[in-house]
Length: 271
Image (cartoon, rainbow, N blue to C red):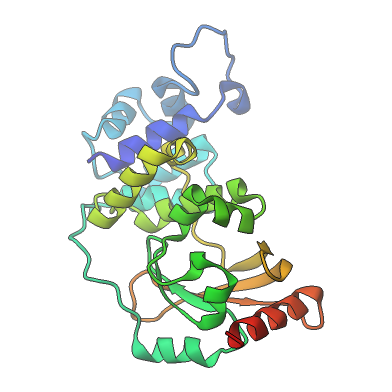
C-alpha cells in the first residue's frame, strides 16, 4: 500500500495554484497543483517527486519531507503525519490483540460517580465508561464506536448540535491515530463500513486530513431529559495502553450545565 503517495496526491489536489503564487490559466486537467509545480515549489526534481508519489521511493529524507510540507502549506500536525508516513519503518501492522481496560482504570471510572468519564481505543471504540457517562448518551456505552454513532445514528446527531463539524475532527483524528498503519484489520473494517454508508465520511476520508485529538475543549450537548449542556472535556493518554484515551467531562461550577448534570445524576440513580 502506497500510503505516502496517497497522502501527497490528496494534499496536492487541495492546494489552489493562486494560493502559492502560480497562475491558473483555466485549462487544468487535474484539481490543485500539478506534480511539476509542487516539485518546483519544494525545490526538488519532478522526476524524484513523481517516484515518491508513485511509491517507487519509500525512503525520503527529512529535509525533502519538510520542503514538500512547506510547499503544501502543512501545519505542524500534518507535517508530523507526513514524516510518519515517510518513515522507513512504515509498514502494515499485525492484527491487534483484543483491547481491554486495566482493572485499576475501571475502578477509577466507577469512583467518579458525579463525573462522566470513559476510555476509548485508538479507533474511537468505547472500551469502558462509568454510569454517568452512559446516562449522558448511548454514544459513551462500552461497545459503541463514537465516529460510527455520530455519522449514522439520528438520535446521536440530535444529541450533538453541529455534528457535521464534529465529524470533521473525528475523521482527522482517526487518520492521525492510524498513521502509516492504515492496513490494520480493525481500521480497514471500520473505514469500509463507513465508506459504504456515508457520503460525508467518504469525502472527509479522501482529504487525508490528519489531526490528533485535542487535549481538551468544550462540547455542546442536547440531552432529551435535562436539556442543554455545555461541558468541558479533558483527554489523557492511558499509560501502557497503546492508543487508549481517558476522556473526562465536567461543568463549570454553579452553572446551568452543572445543575443539569446533577439532575441527570439524580435521575439515573433513582432508576
